[in-house]
Image (cartoon, rainbow, N blue to C red):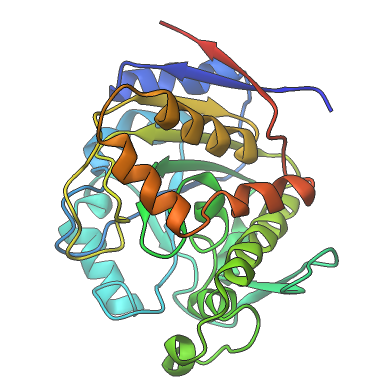
Length: 294
């Protein structure tokens, strides 16, 4: 398989996000969904809407999110919409909570080993393409959060999140944390869910990971640790496997002492297993060419 191209710039600015997107030479056509992390109430590390404004305007996109499966300010449509207003997303953009109402869409995963179907908000069918804007950081359960997590947990409905977290054992939100799956099964379910979303959009996707404010915790944590490693840069690709692998490798190559704390979180959760499984499923390629723009 030919190496995937991954573009990298150290300069973290809203304008440079647009520049890296343009470098991909991929026009996202039709109605464009822009998948972001809205940031849990109380979280200090999530990327703010002001930072995202130029790139969202560039693609004429709609901000999309889905409700969560845990306690907080995003586990119901009413609360999530209010948070979107409080965090400023609704001020700048059209916002779509994709599982706000109605039945979920079921995406089949014939190649799935752990899960054979994925549950996503029905509004995903309103979009022709998707830009996945990921804040690359650690994660309490997945080890790290990047493009693959945005595709899987990020695009799944509340039911879908429970389904992934329990590795296909449960759909009831009230029982999610009673049936937490074996770690590798959970990671594999994430990769399989990601596959279903990639196949849904039939290649009409682009991925940008922003490596700043990198805590060991996710933006879903109301109480998150402060960043432990210096900002690294912006990474862009048409391959979600390659972009996540490149980010892991950039952390490893960093001379910042904080990388050890970050990598301990990734390794203790076997986080790169998601990347390995995603590659085996054919979502993308772990072999990549890193093209530095500065």
